[in-house]
Length: 434
Ligand code: UGA
Image 1 (cartoon, rainbow, N blue to C red):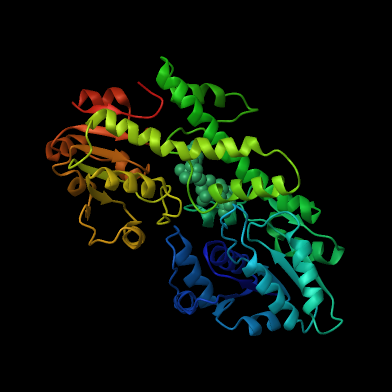
Image 2: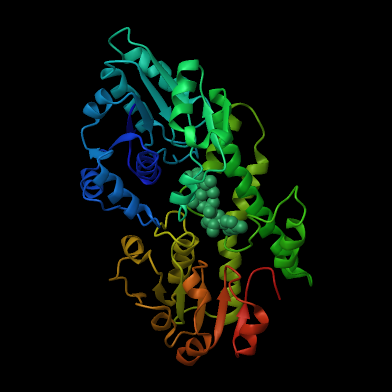
C-alpha cells in the first residue's frame, strides 16, 4: 500500500515520518518547495524532539520520500492523507480553501481507487464536502472513499504521541475504507475506535475544546484564589484526585496558546452557532483565556507601578515548552503591551528566538534578544516567566539576583515555590498563589 501525505506542515511531516516508521511506503508532498527540499535532505523545518533522527532513518531505509509534484504523488498513492492547513478566518470559522483545492486535484488525478483520509482539524461535515467535490470534478467512473482520522499529537512530544497513541479514531463509511485504515494502524489495534465520519470529525473538536475549557476553568479559579487565602496549585491537586476530573490540564497560568486550541474553540463555536446552538460556554472559555494577558500585565504594573523606561527581562517566548512555535503565544501579546507602555525588553527563549524575530525584528529599538537567561536578566527591573521551559526551572536564582537591578519576579507559569524564591530575597508574584 502506497501512502501519500498532502501537506508537510506540522501534522503532515510527523504523520509522514511516523507512518514510514510503522513500515509503510510514504511520500510527502507540499506546495512550499523549501519544505520538500529540506525534508528530502533529512532536515525538519520545525523543532520537534526526535523527529530529525526518525526522518533521516526512514529516508535512508528508502520507505520515505518527498516530492513537490502533487499530481504525481496522487497518481502513485493508494491512500492520501490530507494534512493541509485550515487557518482561522475573521468570523472564527476555518478556512477550507486548501482542502477544497486538494479535493479537486484528487479528482483530476483519480487513476485508480483511492482512499482520501482527512487528518487536518476540520469542521464536522467536511468529508461530505470532500466527497461531493471529488464526485463533481472526477472525469471517470473510478471509485473512491473519504474517511476521517483526526490527529491528537501534541507539539513537543509529537513523535512519542505518534508511536504511543492513546486512541486512533477512524471515521469511515465503507468496509473497504475501514479495512484499509485498520491495516495501516494494525500495530495499535487495541486502541482503535471506529465511528461514522461526522462523529470522528466532532471527536477532535470536542476534545480540544474540552481541554481548553479545563484550562480556562482553573484560570478562573486562580482569580478566586488571589482574592481569598486559597492556593490554586492545591485546588488543582485536590480536584485532580477525583478520577472523574483527573489531574491533567489544570495548570493555571497565562492561558492556552498555539495553533490549535484558540482556533479550534472558535471554529467549534461557529459551527454550533451555524447549527442554531447557543455556544456561550465555549465563548466564555475563550474570553477568560484572552483576559489572562491583561490580568498578567496588571500584575507587572502592581510590581513596577510605572512601566515606561523600565527594563524587563522576558523569559520564554514559545507558546509552551519543547517547541519553537510562537503561534498565538501569550508572549507576543505581553510583549506588545509592554512595548506600548514604553518598557525596554530583553527577550530569551531556548528555541523560539528566530521565529520571534520575524514578529519583532531585532532592529526594534525597545527590544534586545539575549543569548541566555542571565544576559536577559542583566540590569532588569523585573523578570517575567512566560513559558515553563525546564531550563528556567534549573536557573541559579542567586546568580540571577546578582545581575538584576531589582530582584522582582512575575512568574506567569508558577515555575517556582514562592517560599524558596522569597527566601532568596526576591519579590515574587505568581498565578493564584500568595
Ligand atoms: C493540542 C492537543 O493537546 C493535541 O491533542 C492536539 O492534537 C493538538 O492540540 C492539535 O489540535 O493539533 P498542542 O497545541 O501541541 O496540542 O499543546 P498542548 O500541550 O495541548 O497545550 C496547549 C496550550 O495549553 C499551551 O499553550 C499550554 O501552555 C496550555 N496549557 C496546557 C495550560 O495553560 N495549562 C495546562 O494545564 C495545560
